[in-house]
Amino acid sequence: MTDAQHPPAEIPPVLGIDDLGADTQPVAYEVSDGTAYVTLNRPDFRNAQNSVMTYSLDNAFIKAVEDDAVKVIVLRANGKHFSAGHDIGTTERDHHVEYTNRASIWWDHTTRGGGDRRMARETEVYVQMCRRWREIPKPMIAQVHGACIAGGLMLAWICDFIVASDDAFFSDPVVKMGIPGVEYFAHAFVLGPRRAKEILYTGRRFGAAEAQEWGMLNHVVPRDELQAKVDEIAGEIKAMPAFGLTLAKKVINSNEDQMGLQTSLDTAFGWHMFAHSANAEPDDTDSFSASLGGMDARSMRDTANKGATGTSDTGTTDTTKER
Figure 1 (cartoon, rainbow, N blue to C red):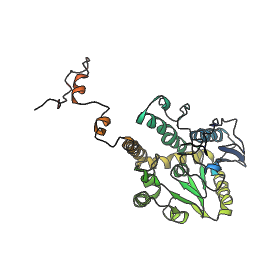
Figure 2 (cartoon, helix red, strand yellow; figure 1 turned 180 degrees about the horizontal axis):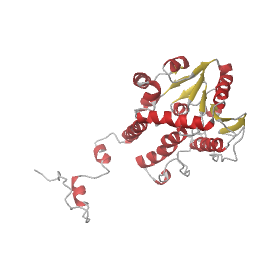
Figure 3 (cartoon, rainbow, N blue to C red; figure 1 turned 60 degrees about the vertical axis):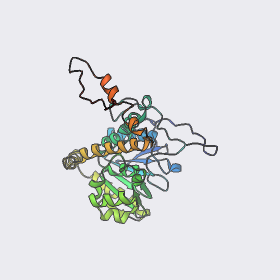
Figure 4 (cartoon, rainbow, N blue to C red; figure 1 turned 45 degrees about the vertical axis):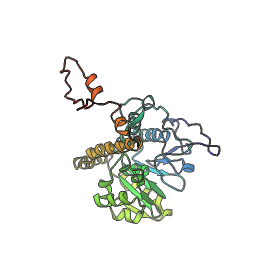
C-alpha cells in the first residue's frame, strides 16, 4: 500500500550473474579463499524478500555452483537482521511484476486472477525456489543474526548448516493470518512435531539457545564471533573432497525425502493455498455460490460434457426444481 509518505518506488532489475558484486543490492556476492559469500543486501527493508531478491539470489547461487574455485557457499545478510521474511508491504514489493519462471514450469502469474494467480507465483518464487536451492551440489552454511522470520526461516532451512549469533531470534507468525505456516513447510523436520506445533500455535519468537536445543541450529556464538565461526567451519569442509561432499548431501537429502519431506511440502502448500482462498472468499450469503465458481446444479447439468469419451449424464441432481 502506498500513500503520500510512501510513494511507489521504481522496481530495480534482477541482478544477472555478471552484475553481482561485493556491494550490489538486493544481493551482494564475493569470493574469498574458496568461499562464496552470498549476502542479502536490502537492509533498509530488513532484508524482506521480493521477487527481485529471489531471482538475484538464484543467479548468485548459479554463479557459485559454476565456479570451480568455490568449495562452500555462505548465505548471510547485511544490516541488523538476517531477514524479516517475504515482502508484504515495502515500496518495492513486486508481486504484480512478470518474471521468467526458472524453478517451475508454470504460466505467467500476472495473466491470471484469484487463486490461480497466487498459486502460480508462490509455486515459483517460494516452494520451487527453495526446493531448487536445497539441491545445490555444494555445501551451504546459513549465517544468521537478528531476526529470521517466516520466509527467512525458509532461506536458512535449505542450507546444510545453520550458525547463529546469540542475539538471533526466529518465528513463523503466519498462523495469525489464518494460514498454517510459510510455503516451504519443513517445520516438523527441523524442529520436531511438538516444537513445530508450539511455535505455530502460539506465534511466539524463540531464541538461538532454544533453536539449538531443539536441533535447528548447529552452533550459537556471540555476535562478534559469528563470521569467524562460519569461516572455521567452511575451512574444515573445504579440506574434504568436493564430490564426496556432493554425494553425502544427496544421500542425506534422500533420507529426509524418504521420511516424507517432499510429500509433506506438497500437502502443506495445498492447505496454504486453501487458506489464502478462504481468506479471500466473501463472507456473505453468496459465498457458497462464489466458492463453486458461480455454478449450481442446473448449470452443471446444462453444460455437461457430451463428448465421445463419456455420456452426457453427469449424475448431478437438479435441486432447483420444487418438490
